[in-house]
Length: 206
Image 1 (tube, rainbow, N blue to C red):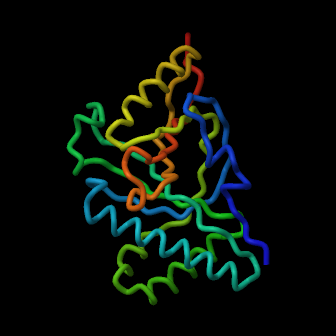
Image 2 (image 1 turned 30 degrees about the horizontal axis):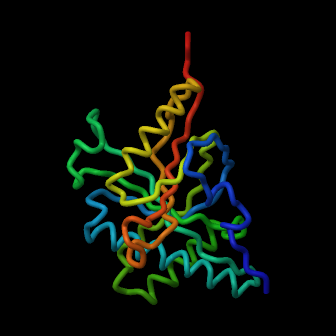
C-alpha cells in the first residue's frame, strides 16, 4: 500500500526559505482544536495531544480502507481579542487553533468516526478529543518565511515579513499562521524551525 506524504506532495506548503516569499494556497481539510492560554501551559499540551490522537485515529481508519498517509506537522493559528500588540497581551489571554492537515480522502464522516473510536481508546483525552473538529480552510495569497530559533525571537522574522509586505503594498487579512517543522522536545531552541505565514491582500489605495 502506498503511503501519502503531504509534505512531499505539497512542498510549498511545508517548505519555505529564510527570506519572505509570496505564495498561494487553495482549500484543504484539517482536524482542528481551539483554545486559549499560555502555549507552555497544560491546556495547550492536552489539546495538542488530543489532536494528534484524533489524527492517528483517522490514519488508522484510512489504512483499513486502503488509503494510508503520514500524519503531517502540527500547525497553529494565533490571535488576541485586543487592540494591543500581541506581545503586550498576557499569554493567558492568547487564543489559538491547532491544526493538522488531512488528505482529501479523509472526509468529515471518517474524521467523526475516528474521533469516536479514539475517545474510547484514549479515555484520559476523551474530553479534549470531543472538541476536535473537521474544517476546511483556504488562505489564498500569503507571505511566508522560515524562522529558525526560539519562538521568542519570532518578532524579528515578522518584522522582515512586514517590510516585504510594505514594499509590495500588501496588508494582512487573516490570522498569524505557524507550522512547526521541528519537535521542541528533541531539538535545542537554536535549531527550531517554524514556517510563519500571513494571508494577505493588496492594500486599498483609494
